[in-house]
Amino acid sequence: MLSRVCSAAVNGIAAYGVEVEVNCGYGETFIALVGLPDAAVKESKDRVSTALSNSGFKFPMGKTTINLAPADVKKEGPSFDLPIALGMLAASEQMETDQLDHFVAIGELALTGAVRPVKGVLPIALSALASGKTGLLVPVENAAEAAVVKGLNVIPIQNLREAAQFLEGEIKISPAKVDLAKLFEHESGDENDFSEVKGQENVKRALEIAAAGGHNALLIGPPGTGKSMLAKRLATILPPLTLDEALETTKIHSIVGLLKSGQALVTQRPFRAPHHTASDAGLLGGNINPSPGEISLAHNGVLFLDELPEFKRSVLETMRQPLEEGLVTISRAAGTMTFPSQFMLIAAMNPTPDGKMPGESKNSPREIQNYLGRISGPLLDRIDLHIEVPQVKFREMSAAQPGEPSAQIRERVIAARKLQHARFAGKKHITCNARMGSRELKTFCELDEPTRDLLKQAMTEYNLSARAYDRILKVARTIADLAGAEKINSDHISEAIQFRSLDRQLWG
Image (cartoon, rainbow, N blue to C red; front, side, top):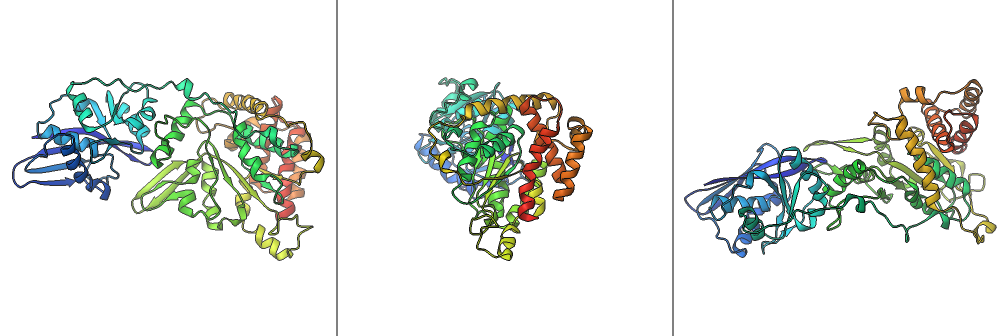
């Protein structure tokens, strides 16, 4: 007898339907698994056969053929265990149901018949809804993640026998539900806060500008000045994720397997801090089968690169396309994948190999130049803010009065972002000032004559590139938004220019 069970698999950050066809025939007892299965899928026949026996079912006698369609796409992972087992039960007439066409089933089987969690459940749930299915059978640990998709009955399954009984109508299982509003509630009692930072008011101001406009920033200063501490607190002043951003971020984390058991959504902006020994594939993504790297895991959040010159130059150069386009394309023999990577790059570095400013360093000019030369000009041009982080004075460190808390700074950042959302309404690819293109710069960054002359003088004096010119305008637009100003004036341009001067002092 022939049976068909609907399942799904992940390709990139999207999912596609997979039809599991099972035919039980006569002859010598044998299982043939076809449809381009990888090693994990091929091993499923052994897991399934043992799970069937330990769940109180009979193993089908005769030749059993299992086909995973479409047959020309490679199938990976153990998520087909549950649909294969259900197909074998239906094909051997141990389960009678007319519900198989209405549900998508995914899950790994333990030898006991228990259903274990799998990766990529959220994109599979979205695919199931788009294909017109009414329900999704998922492991209990993945139920909350799938339940954020409205309009789909998500049935949490603990074991194989429970799944069979549900499909036959012998038992009822209530669909999983999640409260989206409650998911986004966040208590920040034990979180890092800017109020704990002593001094560094200019750096705090620069990070506020970066958060308000989604700008990339480079912190330059001697060791011990608080560069890493300040960068880690940036997440506390970023605006909250929207539902669409949370869904997109969760899909990436889901297919990599970073969601905790029972976690429904990633509701806080990601903060990724890879070590400087990270490889191209670790940062960009890749391996034999293309998968997201650190820059995609930081999508809608922050990518923090500490000790920037210590990263391999080839690794840093791979970020130029993602920084410019917000996407990363990975080409391998197994195929080409495109992953979203709209992140804020926050980098930190010492000004010289021994950590001192160039005038105080014991390193030779050649050693300093070689150290700074590890960061290319094109990469520097893609960083909007170059921020000097000086040593904190004793009177600032010993001050009893706390600094401004993150909550107050965040309110100003959110207000500035609201202005930007209204400004770019209808333009899906532009979410903040840092994402403006040349057309938007002409429309929203007009300058009067005195302001234009000031910018011209700075361009000439610092020998800035055309890309740096665009960065100054974007930062000035954000500074104006924080001030609630409709037009950019000379004060906004002056403040933006100072964030381009430090790199010319060091690299120029």
